[in-house]
Image 1: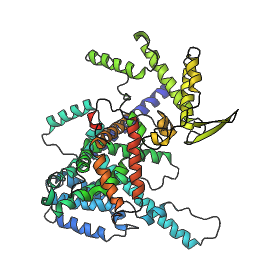
Image 2 (image 1 turned 90 degrees about the vertical axis):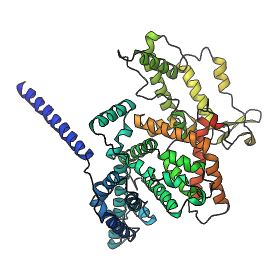
Image 3 (image 1 turned 180 degrees about the horizontal axis):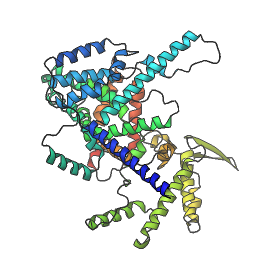
Image 4 (image 1 turned 180 degrees about the vertical axis):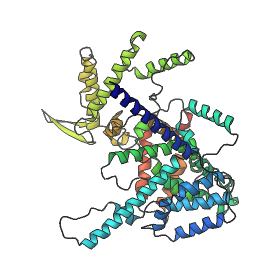
Length: 528
């Protein structure tokens, strides 16, 4: 017994030492050294910029060497934070960052997905060695870009953006008590450079102002477009990339980057802003990448996990009562339970909803979006849609599970009657909300991706939902009209794949529009 007690005590002591060491390392990382630029600092940065311009676009050896030296994390970003007053210095660093974070070349993308033919023996060994070199170089570029994205998102000046409101206020009060000087966020420094150029209109906006706006927007575009080149079936790598992208969305909301996009989108039809329409389209495409518009629209109606079950404390009894009332209203769907069995009903309700989602997702042919022709006796025919059948089957199954099938026989039999085929002209757009069963069923996409509703996921969805609401109400018409004119006159600024990006953005906002809560919002009245 003494040996086991001593071993457990030593293990606890080792764990405490590890935790303390980790805390010390985090404190060291957060305490950045203060950089003071010398006289030739700007000239050296311009030399570095010229060297990067001569770098190979396919292999990028200079960029990979700078990544090994950690120039971005240890030199460039500390200079931006400590010398934010020097606009020329910050703009030069921004030019370097845009070159370092630009997407890989098309040859590098193809090289990253090469499948090496080693077993057949038809390919020479020299060709295979060359393919291995190309693939390793492309993967190294992709890993370096992901590292840059992580450095930007999880910069020490951005830690406040990923805390709750209460902890953020407390931390800000402690910082004001400790040190009167506060460092601005890294993104806010770059965003502040857009204040003066965007305030100028007409001929008062110079060429330098246009270059500054395009430079900052390209930096945001590059950071949003960064994604793993090839995960090779690694689910952990894909989840890490998605989590990092959601953190970037939350950060852009907190640092008012999305507000800047709104300002540009509102006035994109003006002569001084019409050159940013395609760049704004790319930013929207990467911002909404791998996001489900249905989940984004329904996120405003869902209660966050941290506030769904309030804890009663002596200090906030009134708040706990309000939270409890909200929880009962949002979670109760059919039955009204008394206050004594509130916890049991909540657990049973959550379990039934989870089972319903799993049964709906596991249904066969759930991705079929067409119609099925059924032949009946007497030469009659009827059309059955997949989404309608699944929703009816889901409704009937939930009724029988709750014990309501015996009392609602008329409703159950009526729900199984095949619906008549509607005229396509009566629908506002193709599908009329039933084109895709994956996006029309509540919770299906969340269950298919097997993601847990973590606070950062909920915050990212709420940020996107608010952005979509403001964008549709104020910017959707001008932006889509400007882009439509570009495609109509076949502009030479268009690239391959721009039409696909345009129609995907249109699909996202239309799908979001179907499920968005527009009650009590006057900004949607003028949307046509």
